[in-house]
Amino acid sequence: MLHRAVEDISTGSDSDYSSTWISWFLSSKGNEYFCEVDEDFILDRFNLTGLNNEVANYAQALDLITDQLDDEVQDELRGSLDVQARLLYGLIHARWIVTARGLAKMVEKYKRGDFGRCPRVLCQSQSLLPVGLIDVPYEKSVKLYCGRCEDLYSPKSSRHGSIDGAYFGTTFPHLLYLVYPTLIPPKTGPPADGPASANNTGEGKGGRRRGREEVPDAVGGMSGEGGGEGISTASVALKAERYRPRIYGFQLNETAKLQRWQEAMRDRQVARLEELEERG
Ligand SMILES: [Zn+2]
Image 1 (cartoon, rainbow, N blue to C red):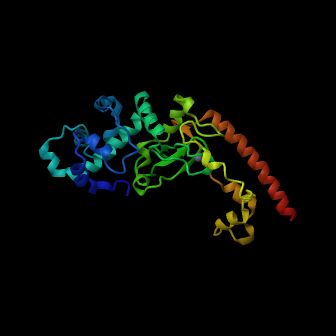
Image 2: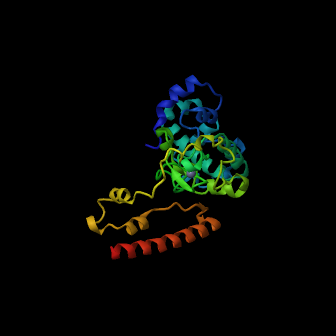
Image 3: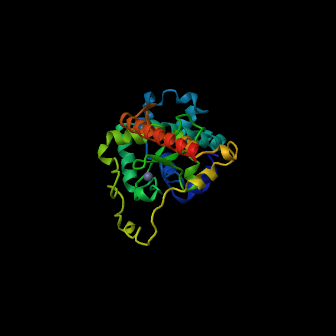
């Protein structure tokens, strides 16, 4: 279901008239995460190395996205070719957004909040960035990375949720913060690009203290694994999976250091919990 918007071909191209395939693609509903790839990037075959093995009807798909397709061919296999053209554009897009010019275009979108904002209350509407969990297409849909809580979220809309994560890649958000360190969100206070946090001040006055995490609920949520009494708080803590940012497959230095420290702290806490549970 990654490429389901074929029905948009007729409606999309009729309603919003646009001169090029790329501008039509970008203006189609659900494609808001994509930025415009410069034509000279696409026309430089060096940038497309290897993509001919990933896309069927590669030459014609390339002609279609660069508006050079013969009219006859267009009528013959327009439908299937459009699917291939989307795939090709997506894979080119993943390469483009890690170039200097591509990053700059995505920064504009990031500042506008085109990728949505973090749903976590304490992130104060931090702007998100799209990321892939794997660089191979047809495997995982796109996720949204929050630079503040350093966690991942699924897009709210199903149209965005069905976009292939390989069209953004595993490196993009982390490279963006590496190249634009001033955009790295602060860990506390209002975000640099977000709305003022005036709406957060009322909290806590209503007499509702923030209690401890409700561990029993969390344990209940894990039911089905192991049997009844075998589930301990410590084992649940150990199972929490974490996202590890990577640039070209390498774990980020500072983040990796911090994560190792956090995990050492977690392991100590887990050991204490196990000790307590053994006693009780
Ligand atoms: Zn967040």
